[in-house]
Each structure stands twice: as structure tokens, then as C-alpha cells.
Image (tube, rainbow, N blue to C red):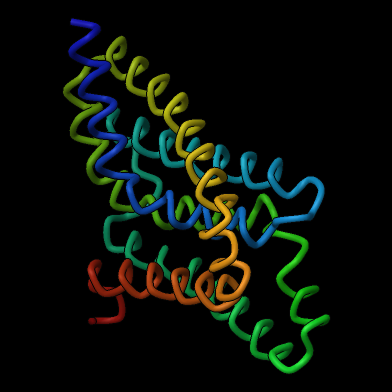
Amino acid sequence: MSLGVIGQAVGLFAVTNVDDVLVLALFFARGAGDRGSARRIVIGQYLGFTAILAVAVAAAFGATFLPASAVPYLGLLPLALGVKSAVQAFGHRNDPEEEKGARGGGPTALEVAAVTFANGGDNIGVYVPVFATAGIGAMSLYAVVFLILLAVWLAAGRYFATRPVVAAALARRGHVLLPAVLIAIGLLILVEGGAFGL
């Protein structure tokens, strides 16, 4: 039974988090050359994903922290971060040194956690029914597998961000791609959830 649950957990994690590898690669590219950036990304990713798990587990036991109608508004978090990044990139577009400085420094752990949590609204919707029917033992196994796979996702994001071809492309266009991806994620969450009557 444990191997079956582990296999299900691996599949469930991969399907619900496939888009995170791109976002992580963009975060790692943004923080390239900044000491401590990778650590902040890892901490932020684990904080955000742990919050997703906590909400899903609590909801599986019947506790809801957010009404279902409020979940789509989580899209405002990545949207705001994307707009902030776009404004910074646009403000430094004509000065290569300042643009480099604007991109440098990498994301904060809180930024990564916010994007992870907001992007995980659909994960919560998938995890809750699975957890509710799994029982405490299986639910714990799911959580352990998810947290282990999160390290694999982080390694994959960093790997892609450091490949010469990918790194060169992200260095040239990462300051545009990260805001675009964050804005797209935010809008997708808002639209798919029907926020603001969309």
C-alpha cells in the first residue's frame, strides 16, 4: 500500500507543480551572482508550499481559512509582484548597469513564498479531496513525498537556470520574462477563479 501511495503522491505532485520549474528557473536566474539568493529561494519555496499543505490538510479535516470565493483573489499576489518587477525593469531599461542592479539581488524569501502560495490555489483544490479520503497515515506520506520532491523541483529550476544556453537567454530576457510570467499567473488565477466577475 505504501508504494502505491508514494506513486500516487509523485504523480499528483508532478501534475500540480509542473509550472513551478519555470518560475523557479526565473527566480534562480534573477538571483544569479547574489550570495544568499539560492538560500532565500529555497526558504521561500518551502514556506509557500508548507502553507499550501497546511491549508489543504486543515481543509481536509473540515477547517477552512478562506471561503472558496476568496481563493481566486490570491492571483493578486503574483500580479502585484509581476507589476512591481516590470516597473523596476522598465525604469532601468536604458542604463545597463542600473538594469543589472535592478535584476540583481534576487527575490526575497517572502516574494517566493507569496508566488508559491498564490500559484498553489489550484493545488489546494486538488489536494483537499485526496487528503480527506486518504487517512492520516497516507496524508503524512503524501506530505513527506511532496516535501522531498520540492527539493527535486528546486534542483531542476536551478539546473535550468545555470545551463549556458538557458542562462544566457534568461540573463538577456529574464528581467522581462519574470514579470510577464508572474503577471500571467496572477491573471490566470483571477480569470479561472472568476474574480471580479471575470
